Image 1: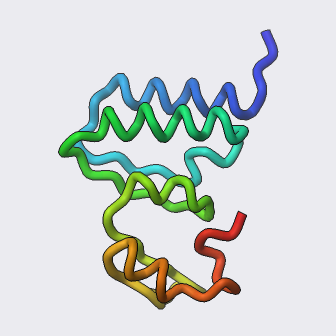
Image 2 (image 1 turned 120 degrees about the horizontal axis):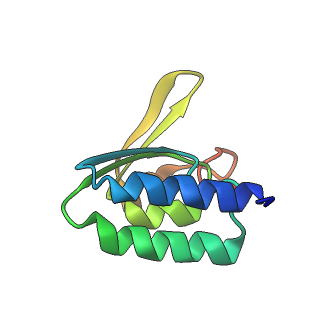
Length: 100
């Protein structure tokens, strides 16, 4: 059976969540998902997270719904760090955060 990149990624994420980790590290977790699948993933992860810690690297603004704090790294240096709302206000359109 052939699976798409998004299906493979969804399966790997499901396998990870079954393990019920207290800390979750994700690198571009929705990169291979279409918009509908990404929205479903975010909703499911949001309800699953509870008091768990999520550390995520992403360029997709939709994923930021899951976080309270944002750290923007450019060329290996932290250029912005703070509460999500504050960082999003300070970030310039030319920066990658929120660029899709």
